[in-house]
Length: 448
Image 1 (tube, rainbow, N blue to C red):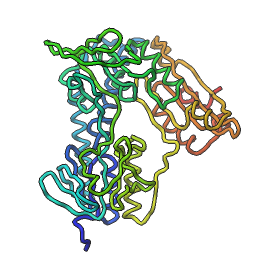
Image 2: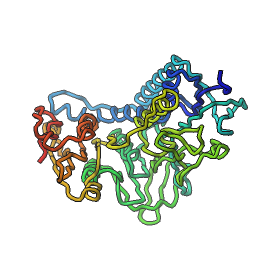
Image 3: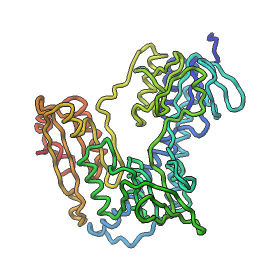
Image 4: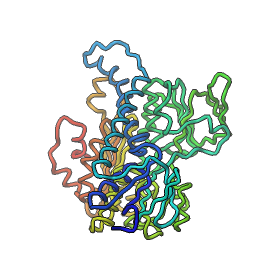
């Protein structure tokens, strides 16, 4: 019998923490997981899943209009935010129940309290209960950053946006990353007047420039407003509850809602990590080695709290690899090369591998192949919106090192294509594959 209360104590029941708990328990470990909010973490409760459901809802705005061009006698339709909101939150409840069932079925003890670290092998719950563990795993994720600007308390973050009482008539979205662009597309389709405010001059840093420029072009064409290189000075709340966003330069912007989408910070504050000598980097993320072990031998960390790649599937893989390594006698580490990602904007974009700029800097000589086309559905619908597929090839080896696209169903297409890029296939391998016609995906094997 162990000298500790548990073999593994996990702080945070998000995607990484739940996977690590389940797998460690399957290896025979006695596991407990503490969660102060809800089981499922950011992705399930206040991130990927409810956001994607809102995106599905938003797409109906254009689909209903397009249906008339396809012969359907569709009347003018009104949108009810509360119906969608409540149905989305109901599905979140369902998913949380499934996550709880997973822990219960694997005999993982779920503790609905905040836990803080008090030493290399000890934690303390908010109730005062002290628990010892042979190994502690921190999987607390990340938290939205709120800009230090006067009146910031009048804004909200992506944590609160799913619970709005009504859809805003005018919304200011602060930020230029994937969260900002996704909610810009969502609220625009719901009929809101959207203004995106970015302190820099670039959207979606890290994505291929050609693809992100196309998103900007389409977004502006749809009617989304942009304020680049804009320094916010303050947010004022008027007597009628509306807001006024003021800037160092330029006219103020009136809004009913201000949404901050200015990045996410590793959620390490107040966890007591210093009591065990756990080192953090300049962003407050836990420093870990390739096996997710921190500077304290008995404490590990996975997911967004380590700020390696803030993606749910990465956190899940890290949690699984940790459990196999520590409790399954199978030392494993995660391969971070060629990880696909997507922005569920309107239209969505997706990419895997190197961007053109990265490839030119690293490889020197590259070949670029593109297809700039109007999807068949858009043609009949009378929409000018064009899709763009881009392939980056190492000119010396013919190996495909990057693939980036924007257009309908781009993430669904990219997921399958990412296998080919990860496998190191060549441009000739793509060319040798017969096209599946008529489809948008066939453009991948017809790139010139």
